[in-house]
Image (cartoon, rainbow, N blue to C red; front, side, top):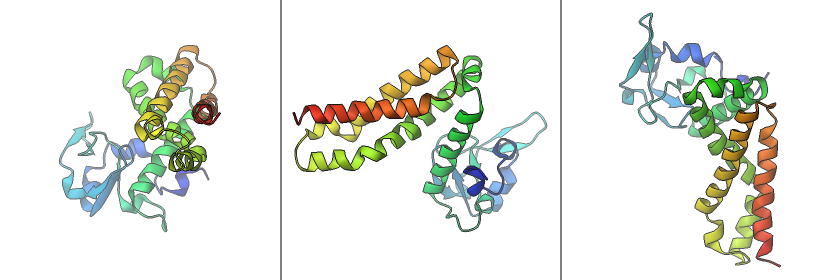
Length: 199
């Protein structure tokens, strides 16, 4: 069982998202695994129609057809923003491991933008977790300047590194191992920056 199967009963999300209009409105709540919001189904007012006339519900917050309902979640897993985030991360991880995304990115600019956001938001942020406590402690003890290690500053550093790795991956069409390399560079860059202030 892969990570996404541990969260979702129905894993064919692409097929589901193209014809889920009625299912969404039969449920009291729904969630978006792109923007990770959870909200009342009554907020969903827009849809996209397929060539066969089926309707796919559109998220009112991000405008994407990435909505799921509580009955799609495995028993015991809470229907929450954290679970939506887990679905997003699992999809990203699955695609990066098993798909030659570089080929798809070259053909589809929307796909590139879509996965670029995932890489920046989820993988780059994930890279910060192992060193976040150390950085917070250094800031608290005034060993490093707060402004240089604010969330905005760290996001700028991670975003720049992640963007460079993703562009290189697409340009060279190499294997899908850029994520651990990207994570390692993010951690190394931020730790070196922190240590310079303590020399």
